Length: 391
Image (cartoon, rainbow, N blue to C red; front, side, top):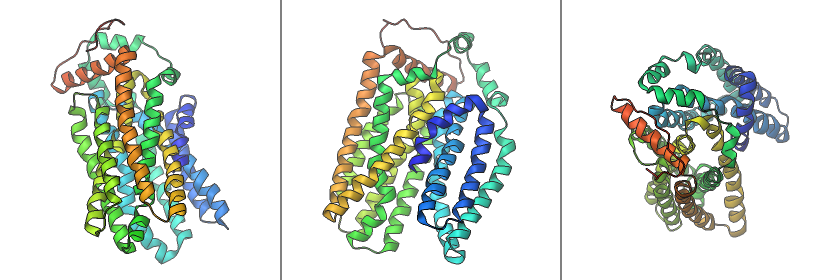
């Protein structure tokens, strides 16, 4: 999981050299090959290499450039919906395929299960190759959107060339990265330790699996709900994060005092809803925060901190449980991290509004343009002077 997130930056770096089609096609084939090799490993040490590293890196190279493709392909007024829907694939896969894979493992063993998964990826690879080869420039939706934009917007996009590395010098980018890493660590507990938490509380393994399933279903529902309403929100989308983080902090705290299984189920659903807000909106929030001209960079900003957060959660929850024999301290830590995320999210917006006025104004102008286009009109882009007041 960590490798599949952290290696998104190298994945984005090789796209300009080899082309997004060649990168995605080659990496998807390597995913299939890595699973096939995993089915022949003689010990768990080789499993770390073939599955942990090889499959993790290949899946990062195969999936992360697709976010960039979505940001370039989909019109700006549907960007939030598109990126949110794209993130639902992993949630749907966990909810639907986990029981199926568990049944297959019981029937044929884990080695043949890896081979079956390898064959499925290879078949989907053959089907998806012609679809991925359709480039964003040939998409008729983009052409229609370009016709709706005013001439001054077109000139702005054609003449304004930016370096994608410039985004690394933005302080709010590092604030966003830290925010994503901390929230991934906080909510990674529900993905990794929720079942064990339920069983250690005194309930059965089946009840733990039910809690995890409801948690995943709530996350999926939250993402689908965001895909409907996110593009219609006129204020900065990142303002949703402080409210979600506070709700997550309260939920983690109440889990420490939960004694009945019904209470745990309700809190698991609440955690899934909150986690869906962050996982579903992270790519769109990053793209909105820094503007469309940096979309190639913002697509890879979110993933590496998330991978680091998932790596940290094993240390936070596992090490704490080994020391104390209870998950309460881990939940207290998750609650504190959620409160830190709420403060960081607000500080990111406040910093950009007060110290990076041009980028903040660009974000607000984009929001205005989206609203105008959604209403069927056009929007004339006018340059804003550096010392002008914030809209």
